[in-house]
Length: 503
Image 1 (cartoon, one colour):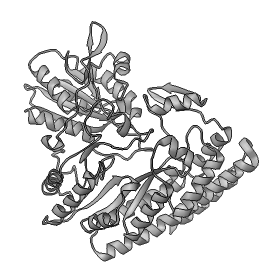
Image 2: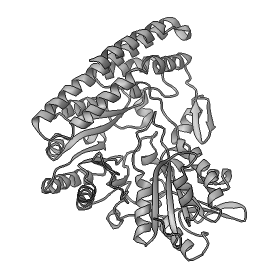
Image 3: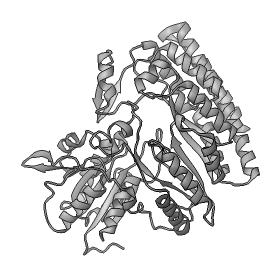
Image 4: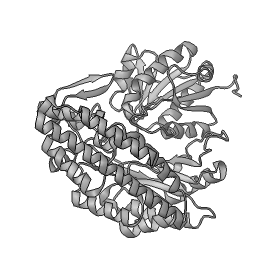
């Protein structure tokens, strides 16, 4: 029950686009919530808040002192603004603030476009929102807070960026929903680091969040702190499966590897076992380390490949090679560790020749999924790549804060549309297989490993079919140009996926 006489904060994240992203806890909001709670504030957090907001959110908003809106992905921005407009009717006196990675470089623009928003948090929000809360609790104004855009005499102003938190161990663990059903599936997400030491031109994390400070590009929590949060999740919520959602769990100049070794040692000493997943770069894949992590519960690794064409790799500034990718993939398979890959099949300057090379690479390594095969590069406001593509004649426009572009080759445009349509039925088959793999990966015995290996064989079969039909789409475009017809391929895919669902 909310204490209507005391000030409290309401933190909301707009719902995800489930066609692109899987839902998860909003760890950014929950990090801010934890800091506010340490200050004695009452905080309510809602992940994936729908528009229009449900009655429970409207009721809480009506008495909130602070309403915060978290935007992890740029595409969530319009919904966040819509929530502000709707909730302002219920909360005329509340202070509305907005922030998150998806809002990078859009702070002033969003405030100009949405009068209901009082401030925008630039970059990391832990200390900034804490200071804002203190000001609001004291009845003081918001002007002059480092890291916060505010309004002054009808203009959007800021006191400049606030340095990020250097010692992440000093922060409290992310706030978790106290509901007994919050983690009924035994799974939770955890963040153990911030930033990324890489320079990939397409990524928000490594380029945007690191431009404004001189701290290390990758900052880590200690292994002791991470284990402490795992213990709390296990003992308090029954969690036995953890997704470590860092941009790079093994990042930094060797620190990440050292920390991973200590993490494995500490995890092995716990009186219970968990399974977990990580994300890292292919050039960090190390046999002895992964074998050690697998022994204490590592079951899944996400690696970013992005492309197998040299021109794309240079554009994306990946600083990795296809040989490194193939070595990493072979090692993960040998260790029986499930993995998925980031891959950008289409970018504004893509050619049919480059797509042919990508398909050959994916076929050779049995790597793909519907989303990977049809993934096109997303450009974010402020991205370095915007100027590069402008110089190369790419036609772009911005709508609702998202950057849209046209492929320079009309044949690529035709192929992209065809693959999206023809291959779509595979998505359902893949999802069922991925769910089965996730469940199997939570076992610790040999039978579970064997079952997981069988499911990976199933994934390989699906991948092979996907690539086969993608190649057929490509052949049609190469032979018939923009007038290519795909009705026969659409029918064939329907039959193939129907067979797979019945097996």
